[in-house]
Image 1 (cartoon, rainbow, N blue to C red):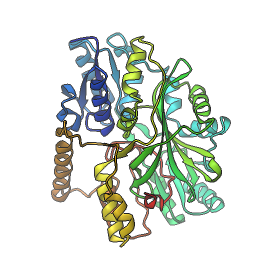
Image 2 (cartoon, rainbow, N blue to C red):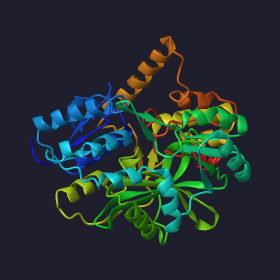
Image 3 (spheres, helix red, strand yellow):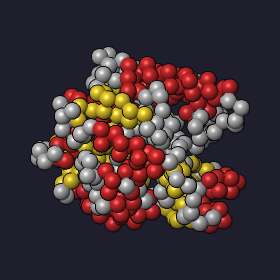
Length: 435
C-alpha cells in the first residue's frame, strides 16, 4: 500500500463518491468505509478498498475502535470524514488516530465552533455576511413570540446538527413552520437552545466552497442553485458554477479564519436583492456537490491531500459554466412540477445541458448508480413491510413530491438520508422554477 492512499468515511454518500472519483483522477488511491450496504462508493471503479464499520450515530466508540483497526492494518496518507457525525467522532478521538495517519483537523474547539450555528450567526455578521434576522430560543413560547415579530413562515433550526445521545449522536432536523401550532409540535424535537430565523422569500441559494489552510484559500468555487429538492427546504438538484463575486472571497476567508477552520468547506448563502449575501450554514466537511467543484477544475479532495502531504498546491478557482445534476432530486422535482401542472417548469427539468456533472451516473463508472437504485429499492421495500411507523423525516423526499401544493416538508439536518448538501431550510419556495 502506497503512502498516497486516502481513506474516506461514509461511502453511502454522493459527496464521498465524488471525492473518491476526484482523488483517483489526481493520482491517489482511495478506499472507503461504509455503515451499511449497498454503498454507492463501494461499487465504483475508483474505490480501491471497501470496509464496513459501525455508524457513529449509533456508537462513537465502536466506530473509532474499528476505524483505528483499519488504520493499523494499512498505511494511509490521510483520512477524510464524509459526514459531520464522522468528523465529530474523529476529532474527539484524534489522539488515537493522529499517530497512524494525517487528519489535518484544527483543534477540537475549532471543530466544535465550526458546527455551531449560533456562533456562525454572530461571526457572519462581523465579516459582512449577515444572516437573516434570527433569535436563540429555549422553548415554544419564546419561539412563538419571535415568530410573531419576524412574521410567518419561519425556519426552526438546531444550534448544532448532532447532539450526544448515549454512546452515539442524535441528528436534529431543520424545518419551516407556518403557524404557532406547528411551532408547538416541532420544538420538542430540538435540543436547547435552538434558532428561529426569518424565512427569506425573495432570495436565491448560493454556495461558496473550497479548501482553506495557512490563512489562504487554496481552492474556491462559487455556484448558484437553479433547482432544489425538496423545493422549499432542499438541496441542490441542479446547480451551475459562476464567477466569484467581487469581495466575496475575502469575506469567506475572514469568516473561516474567525472560526479557526482548516480543510474542505462549503458555506451556504442566500443571494439577496441588490447583490448582498447572507450566510446561513457551514459544512466543514465533504458536501454532496463536491464533484461539481472537481469537474470545474477545483479538485478539493486532491488539493487538501496535497497540502497535507506538503506538496504546496497552487491555489485554483473553479471555472464558471459547469453544471451539476442530482438524479433522484431531479426526478422527484419533475414529478412535483407535473402534479401541479407546471409543464413549462417540468420541461426545464428534462432539458439536456452541456458540461454536466452527475451525482451518481458516469458512463465509465456505472456501478454507483446501480447501487443507489438498489439502495432506494431496498429502503422502499423495508418501509412497506416494516411494522414500525415510518419516520417522516426519512421519507421527506417521497412525501414532498405527493404533498399538497402549500405544504413545507421537514428535511433531515445533515446528509444521512438524502445526502443533504445543506443543513439549512431558508430557501425560496419558487426557486426551482428558475431553470
